[in-house]
Amino acid sequence: MEKNLRLSMAKNEYDIVTFWKMFDSYINELSLNASFGDEFDLEYFYSDEYRNAIDKLRTRETNPLRIFFITKDENIVGFLMHVTYFDEDRKCFLMEYCIAPEHRKLGYGKLAYLMVQKYIKDEGASYIELTPTNESNERFWSSVGFRKSTDMDEDNKYYYRKSL
Image (cartoon, rainbow, N blue to C red):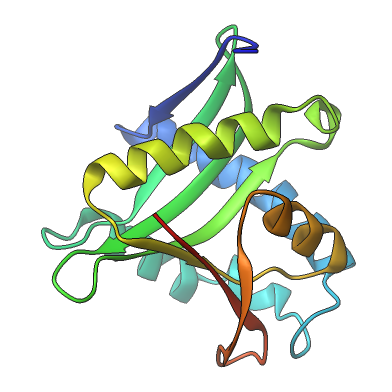
């Protein structure tokens, strides 16, 4: 069940502009549905501070942040952001993962995740970690093998982990 999905890494300025446009819609939706952790700070995600931090992570030499688009038949249906810390314990932190609302409930989320997981594993990560923001996210990540840990992030959300 391939569904013609493909992953493509953001490579140029046009891709980054496209990503931020998609991110803005995603972060607005996420802010409305966040129910785990401390109060959601939407202003921070729109700030120059956050966007500069992401750009710095994306362009650094060691452990760069990767932005991928999820495409179907050349149309972008979602995106994701992750960083793998190879010089630490080879943890991959999946920072953001989004399937656009009009493409949900079609199996794209799970299929794209399995593609991402293979990429991350082949890249050399030993496990993936993330923090769901609501019950729907929690159900999705649990359905693809993530387990809730006892560790929490700075916003009082539990980390979910999956060994590779």
